[in-house]
Each structure stands twice: as structure tokens, then as C-alpha cells.
Figure (cartoon, rainbow, N blue to C red):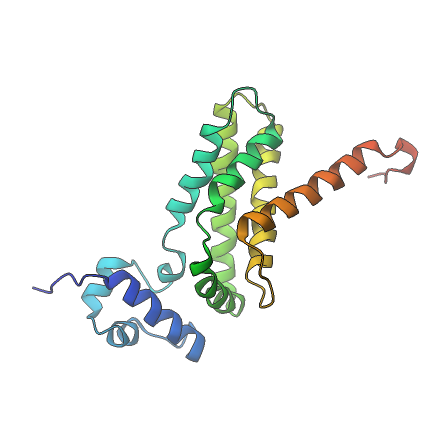
Length: 200
């Protein structure tokens, strides 16, 4: 019987990412990942369903932090306030010691269409979960869906900025700046005279 190795998940994640960066995601096999981590293929599949999940493992933790932010927001919060609360709840997931991993992970995803599709599905699922949480807080449609999508958009832009090579701001600081810019843009659009607004 194969022994459950302590720290096996992290060893497999690091070994897989090294191989994905060096030789490509499609070219890397589970056997190679397991061997590089000093483990067996059977042990790999105890930790991950397939080699894609090495890159997407932890999605449920991130979603839980978004939803906790919504749940903990004060009564009477507006849809945008709830979106901001969700973003604040998620920010702790992206500590500075995670940035190097995230940069390399994003390089791998950016080079593979199927991984990009998986990432898009992850974001769509998150937006749907947030919209449901907002509805549970009494936010009607379409405001709940718009706010959920807004939170995910701000998150996506913030994450892309955070993993840039020359970026040094913390993730919470970037989210704050991106949300402030979106809020200013929305306010400017709402205040523009009707004659200046584009027609559909």
C-alpha cells in the first residue's frame, strides 16, 4: 500500500509547474510530475483528479472567501457595496508569498487555449455564485447579476495587474484602485447628459 506522503500536494504542485513552464502543459505527463516530486502516479491521483487540477486546485477556497465577504457585509448594503465586500473577502487569498507561483501559473495558462477556457469557466461559476449570494441578501435582478459580474471583472483585472513582472503593489491595494476606477467611470457615465450618451 502506498504511503500518503506528508506535503505531497505542495511537492506535486511545484514539480508540475516547473515542468509546465519548462516543456509545456500538453507535453507533460502525470508520470513525469510524480517522478519529479519523488512520488507515484497513484499518489498523484489521490491529490488531483488530473494534471489540469494542479493549476486550479483551491478554487472552492477562493469562492468561499468571496462568499464570506458577502455574508459578513452590513445589513442594507448596496449591490456595489456587497461586490466590494466580496472582493475584500478574497484579497487575503493572494498573499505576497503566492505571487511568484501565480505569475508562473498565469504564463502556463496564457499559452494553452484549453486552460484559458477552464479559467473562464471558473470565473463564470464564481460570478454565478456571487449573484446567488446577493439574491439571498435581498438584491433583486438584474442588480444581483450585474454586481456579481462586476466583482469578478474587478478581480480579473486586479489579478492580471498583480502578476505583471514590474508590479509591486499588494493585491488588496490593486483591487481598491481598480474598483475606485470603475466607480468613477460609472459615475461619469451616469452623470453625462443624455444627448452625449451613445445610442444602441
